[in-house]
Amino acid sequence: MSHFVRVAGLIAVLLLADAGAVSAATPKEIDAAKKKGADWLRAKYKSPPPGTLGKTCLAGIAMLEAGVPGDDPAIKSITEIVRKEAWGQTRTYEISLCLMYLDRYGEPSDIPLIQILAIRLLAGQSSFGGWGYECGSPGLGMAEEQALKAAKPPAVGKMNPEVEKYVQGVIAFRAKNPPSPTDDNSNTQFAVIAVWLARKHGVPVDGALDLIEKRFRGTQNPQTGGWGYTPTTDGSPSMYCAGLIGLATGIGRREERRLKTVPKTVPPKSEPGTEPKKNPDDPFFNPKTPADPKVEPKKNPPPRVADPLDRASQVAFVGLGIHLAESAKAGRGALTVKEGTHGLNDMYFLWSLERVGVLYGVEKIGGVNWYEAGAHTLVRSQSPDGAWAGTDYGDEVNTSFGVLFLCKSNLVRDLSGKVQKETSTEMKAGNPTSTDPKSTDNPITKKDPLDVPVVIPGPTGSDVAILASELLRAGDQDWAKTLAKLRDGKGGVHTQALVTAVTKLDGEKRKEVRDALAERLTRMNADTLRSLAKAEETELRRGAVLAMAMKDEKAHIPDLVAALTDDEEIVVRAARAGLKSLTSEDFGPASNATAGEKRLAAADWQRWLSKQKK
Image 1 (spheres, rainbow, N blue to C red):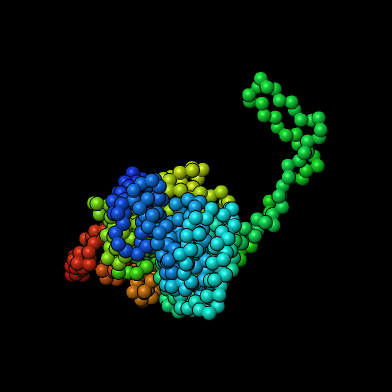
Image 2: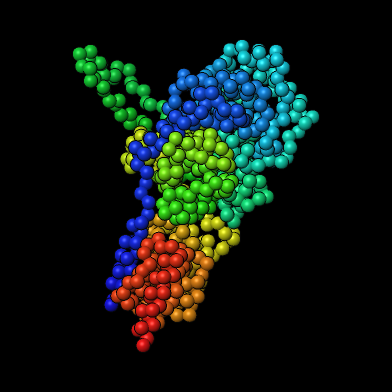
C-alpha cells in the first residue's frame, strides 16, 4: 500500500470518528432560554428577596439587557431599592453594580448619585491600582443627601456642585485613612467597568485608569499570560478576563489619543458660481461635487506598530484560549460548567468570558466559538422554571449571569468601539449564527486573537516558542515553507514547536500541522516511538501512534493495542485507525468509549493478536 493512500485512509477514518461532537444550540432555543431566564428574574424580583444590593442590581441589569421594559414591576421595584440604599454603600461590589445599574437604567436624575458612587470608588482604589472589598469614605449627612436628591442633573460632562463639596471631604478623609493595600482582581474587574462608565458622567477618572493600566501590565505572568486572584497567586480563567478588561481601558484611551493626532480632512470648496442649481421639479437631484485638482488624494496612515498593550493582550488571549479549548474538548464542543470551581468553569467565568468576547469583538478564542459553546451549555443546563441553579452564588446570581451571557451584554459600548478601532460599534445580541459581516444583527468582528502575531507563553527566548510563533505568524504565502521547515528540521525543538503550534490552531491549518508532526515522527526508530506514545503531551502521543501506522510495520501492532486505553479520545481514534489500516480488522472501541469499553476492545485485539502468532 502506498504512503499517500495509507495517510489518506487514516485521515478519513479520523474525520468520520469526529462526527460525535455536539451540535450548537439554535437561535430559537437561545431566545427561548433568554426569555425564560428573564421571566424567572421578573417573578423573583417583583418583590425583591432579601440579600445584597449588588445581587439585586445584577438581576436588574440582566433583565434590562434581555429587553424587560423600565416600567415592569420588577424593574420599578429594583430601581426604587437602589435609589434608596445606594447612598450608604461602601463595599466595592455593591458600589460598582449600583453604578452599572443606574447607568444602564439611563435616568438623568440619577447622575448625582452615580457621581457619588464613582467618587467613593475612586477613594477605595489602592496604590497598586486595584480594589478590595471595602471602599473607605465618609458618609453623607441627611441634609447633603436631600440636597443631592433634589438637585437638577448637571450639564453633560460636569460634576454636580454638591458632589464637588463631597469630593473635598473624601480627599481629607482619605489623607487620614488611606485605603488598604490589600486588593484582588475580582473586586477590581467590577470596579474597572464602573470607573470607565463614570467618565461620561463628568467624574475625573484619568488617574485611576492610569493605575489600572499599570497594575495589569505590571502583574501579568510572563509564562502563562494570565493573572491570579491577587498578584501573588496562580492564574485562573476568570482573572485572565479581569486582566483583559483592565488592558482594554488602556487600549481604548490609546485609541483616543491616536485619533486626536489624525488631521481632519476638510472637503474642498467650490468656486463661486460653479454650484449646479437645484431643479425643484426633480426630487432625485443630487449633483456630484466637481473634482478639485488642487486636492491631493487621501493617504492611508502608516500601520501602527504593536506596543506593550497589544502584546500583553495577545499573550493573555493565548492563555485564555488554551483553557477554553480544553473546556470545549471535555464538553465535546460545549463549555463545561461546574459548581465549586470559583472562577474556573462556573457561571461567573461565563459572564467574564462574555464581557471579554464582546468588548474585543472576537468570535473565536483559541479556535473555540465562545458564544456557541457557552450558549449550548446554558440552553441544556437551564432548569424547567427558567433558572440556572447553583450553590456557589445562588440561583439569582447564576440566572443573571446566564441571561447576560446569552444577551451578549455590553455595558461599555464606547470602550468596545475604541478597542475594536470602530468608533460606532454597537454590540447587540443579534443572531449568533449569522455569517454576513455586514449584518447589523451580528456585528461581532469575525476574527480570532490568535490570528495576529503572538508570543507563545513559555521561557523568554525559548527556541520552541520562537519556532512555534514563526509558524503562527506565517501568512498564506509563507505557511507551507515554514511548516516544512519544522517538519524536516533537525532537533527535538522542531518536534516540540509543532506540538505547541497545533494546540493553538483549528480547522485546516491544525490538520496540516498534525499531518506534518506524524510525518516527522515516521523518521524515529521503534523504541523512540514507543517512548513518545507515552509522552505527557496528547498531540505528541497521537502523532507517535499515527507514525507507527504510517511506517507499515506490523511490529507496532502491540503498541497500537496498548494505545487503545489512552485517556484522550484523539489518541484512541488514531490507534484504532492504525490497527484497521495494518490488519484490515476492527475490534473497536467505538467513539467516546468508556474506560471499561476501551479495555474490553484492547482485550479483543490482544486475543486476535495471540491467534496470529500460533
